[in-house]
Structure formats: structure tokens, C-alpha cells
Amino acid sequence: MDMIAKRPMTYATRRLQAGDTFSASNANGRVLAASGKAGFVASSTEAGGSDAENISDLRARYQQKFDKKAYHGWDAATLTQKLAEAKD
Image: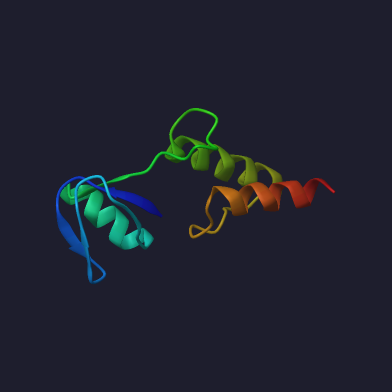
């Protein structure tokens, strides 16, 4: 996940200044965001709403279509792809 440093910090042996962007794993990204050291970079392809709302909607659509819950590790792009393939 893409993150932006909110203050000077070190991540994965890199020294980051406030405003520097970097990639972090999902687990590390959540910890960094919760501690206030970094924030999430807004996706430019997102059509409005937050990522959490978007993924929740996709998971609900997946559950309606397949009558089972979506794998929790799938991101929005994967869920969209699975739903598109099912329509074929």
C-alpha cells in the first residue's frame, strides 16, 4: 500500500522526511497509520468514497453473486476482476 510520511522516520532501512512517499505492507501500513507516523496516499483512480467503503460494497456484491464470502486478502482490483469474470 502506498503511504506518505507525516514526520521524519525510518522505514525498511530508508530515512524518510515528512511528505516522502513509500510502499509498505498492509500490516505495517496499518500500524504506521495508527501511530500517526504515516498516512495513506489517496488513489487517483478512485471515483469517490473511501477505499473501505468501496471494498465493503465489492465484498457485498461478491457474497450476493457467489453465495459465499470473499477472501479477506483480496483488494478492490481483485474483487472487481472476479466479479467481471463471473458475468461472462
